Image (cartoon, rainbow, N blue to C red):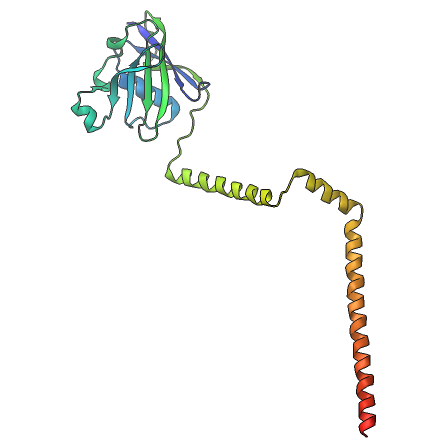
Length: 218
């Protein structure tokens, strides 16, 4: 029995690739599950293959776990559709959307037809894996990531309001190294001494004035 080799890549992450061998009489659901066995994603999500043109324009849909509207419109189901039925070109392409709730768009392309299967291999069979599949954020992870991003933005906004630039840090460090900060502290100490001296002088004047007043009354 002949074998199809499909190359599957993410539309937005074209450096992440899987190549899968599958028998011609196996179904789109077999291919769907084999792909997600390699990505670690949950295969039981509403997804669809679309027969595609060379420019990735979507045509007829082949669905997994379709909604009721699609069922009512007679959409084809992956589990019931053999891949060979939809191969019209030696480089046949399928546009593939995984998980309509949080979709990833992918490109599926037939890159090789092997005339005989290997009896030692259990198909579908992953023959090439490049890159790790992008993470899917659930609601909790998404909220945490959003909060962290907001905190970082607030820090930058504060610095921008202060007109802070990187050169300011260098200037402050240079001032400290030159002893300017020490002079400032010395001036503060002198002012403190003057305040203490002034307080003592004021106290002496008051005592003298008070003593004179008492002598005069006496």
